Length: 435
Image (cartoon, rainbow, N blue to C red; front, top):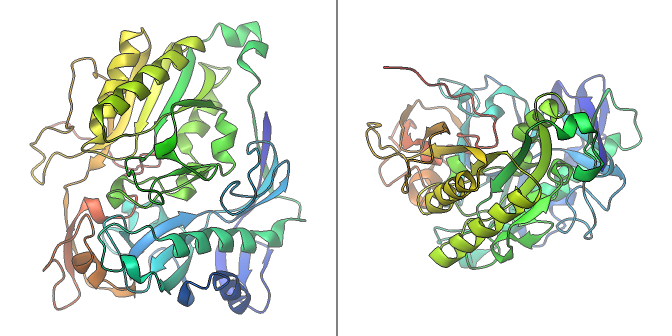
């Protein structure tokens, strides 16, 4: 399977009369873009903003981040099974506007799963979005049934974000990319003897799929992850838009749609393929609320790993708390099967950092990488807000609470509420210190 990602290196975003890309500048026709957003009758209000690194601007409540991309050949669309008919991802060519993203923000209503981004100030670099220009969709909907709910599907805004990102990217469909990244991984049995001699490594991804009600979980080809069993997938499928982020879990532990499609861990494994490892593929697993479901997924994922000859594994968990049981069980099972395994997740060690980091611990899990502490306490200065900061305190945001916003506009919050800040996808800039 061969995938070409044609990249157009965007340095800035501006508004103009026609959506176009030229010499590093993405120009967006605001009226045309908003017409695309308003194709969904449930969008009652919408506007577009542009933010840059260093702007003293706070975005809240942030719902998703999406890369501007369009499918040029070899597939049905940028997000098959979601915004386009179901079709195979991972082949042909996809064009992307690199170095920028589209962020979606609620004009008023947030929830447990929504987050906060600072474009400037002391917390600018706590997310990747603080270091790139972003087009921001600020929208409201008539989804009155969930406005007062802590858990929100955010369907209208999330789908509008996907549509708009693809719509804008159409401006580079017929252009020649400035760079082309090629991802090609042949079937395991067709690889050279030199590659087969290298240790086989598999990436085990545990996206958030705990919600038994439909509409909240991570989607794989438009299918709710809660309805899946572990499946072997080609890494190109992920890099080509087969996954769409859900709307369920504490925000800092989320993996955004942007991160699913630009997954740096997959790219790092690809870079080492044929040099130090034989990259076998991705085992798409799940996170489940019931113990029997957890055990079933771990057992099946383990047998897939054995069947393809894995000698090493990287396990990434999207979430914490109850999912720690799935995560630890997966690490233990793979080690039991003789597969050297490392784990990638955030942790919940309390504001003082002294608590047990994971709900479930086991001596076999002796190679863990942490991307942050969800309980870390932040004191954030006042700045201009896009959206509504009150959502942090009012709407059940996982990092906020009643009284966390001060009269002068400054606020306090836990890491939980900072949008995808722990970057379990592999983007995390956190470091550790001996003490």
